[in-house]
Structures are given as C-alpha cells and as structure tokens.
Length: 281
Ligand code: NAD
Image (spheres, rainbow, N blue to C red):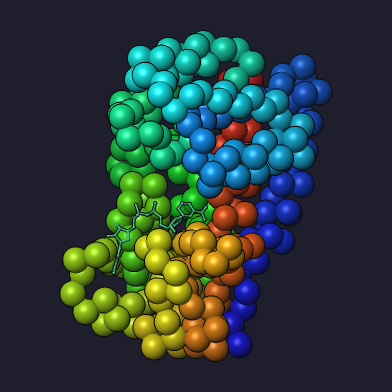
C-alpha cells in the first residue's frame, strides 16, 4: 500500500509556521499584504480566489481582491498592476489566470514588479529558476517539491518523469527536479509511447488536465506519483491519476483533493511572507 502524500496535513503544519513569521513581522510593525486581480467571472477562478482569501485570513495577511469586468482593456489591467506595484501595503500581486482571451497574459505578467510576483510567473523569476539563481518559484512546483521532500522521497540520481510541459507546472517542476539531481524526462502530447517513459519513473508527476489519465499499468512499482490535475467530472473534483489502480502499485501517492492543491495555496502564502520579509530587511 502506498504512503499518502497528505497535502492537507503538510500544509496545515507549514501554515502554522508561516503564521509565526507573519506575527513576527507584525510585532515589528510590518504588515503582510496580498492583492489578487480577477478579470471576468470564470467560476473555477472565483473558487481559487476565495480559497486564497481564506488562507490569508488564517494567517492574518491583508487580502485585497480586485474584481475587474470581463471587458477590461489591457491598458486598464496594466494600470491596476502598476498601482499595486507602488502600493506600500501590498507585498504580493497575483493575476488570476486564465485571463479573458482578448488580454495578453504574458504582457500583463511582465508588468508585475518581480519582487512582488508571488506566483513566480514573471519572466525574470522563470529565468532565474532556469539559470539556477535564487528567485520566486511558482507555487505549484514549489509545493510538489516540498511535498516530496517532506515525505522523504529520495531524489538524487533518480529517474523523474513529468507529463505536461506548461509554463506554470510542467517546465518549472522539471527544472526543480533537475536542480535536485534527478534525471528528468519531460513528456507531452506528442510524446511517443508515453507508458515506456512513465514505467521507468521513480518520481512521476502528472500535470495533464485529463481525468484519471495515469493508470496502474503505467507506473513503476514503488514510484512516487504526484497528481497535479484538477478536473471536474459529474460535479466532483478528480485528478489526472486513477487513484484506485495506481495506489496498489505506487510507493507514494498524492490524493486529489487534499494533495498538490493544498500545497499550492500554502506556497503562495509562503512566497507572500517571503516577499514581506525581504522588504522588511
Ligand atoms: P496545460 O493544459 O497548460 O498543459 C497540459 C499538458 O499536458 C500539455 O503540456 C500537454 O502537452 C500535455 N498533454 C496533454 N495530453 C497529453 C497526452 N495525451 N499525453 C501526454 N501529455 C499530454 O495544463 P496545466 O496548466 O499544466 O495544468 C495541468 C493540470 O493541473 C490541470 O488539470 C490543471 O487544472 C491542474 N493544475 C493544478 C494546480 C494545483 O494547484 N493543483 C495548479 C495548476 C494546474
């Protein structure tokens, strides 16, 4: 039976540690603030933004949500980002993705001051990760690595296979695992014979966006399987991993819900606290 990589328990422990850091800042008269910009009314985004607000509340972080109409122009969005860049109360700025189609995501993200880019999506922070320099690391990959390490999964010299090559999950987690001295294979929709790759993986990260995509036959016995997927099926949230068939084969497995999603929010809080701590020096 696989060991459960329990994001709920791990994030609860880390949130308690973060609360102490927020309190320490407050005792020196420094507050911590996060601003979230939400453009339009995508229902999934509404849920994510609400959860981020709740996490801020738990830690005593000032949380500000800017709700902009779906027809907001690029110029207006960038003006709001600029205003938050200058706002002394705000340590972290997050633009909730996806943006409506008429807006240029990359251009908006590039507007965020890199030191306030708590999502780690600014090209400067992505570039730092790729060149091995310290910077803000994107929350989901950071949370995955935290989870693997906290559960004692050996990384050095191990075969890591990542399915999915997005800028927000696949590529950065591949880079983080490479920095941990894993031998990394990055698979994607054009990969031939995917199972041949996944069956070699000591660490398998599924970030595909397809419900129950990874099945038991694709997994090496004893592997650590990280399920990043959030898919809605018949009103239920399911991951990219078919838990029922993979769990008996894997050595470690993260559940959905209660896995990577919890770690992501926790790492967003950590990045925000770190931004405030840097400013307070
Ligand atoms: P994306 O759509 O940007 O990327 C999906 C990737 O999967 C692509 O790179 C594509 O090449 C690959 N892919 C698609 N079909 C494939 C196939 N048949 N074989 C191999 N590879 C295939 O998605 P994303 O933004 O990286 O998100 C992936 C999943 O993770 C989604 O379900 C998303 O909701 C979820 N997600 C969860 C969190 C979290 O906090 N838990 C954060 C971000 C994303």
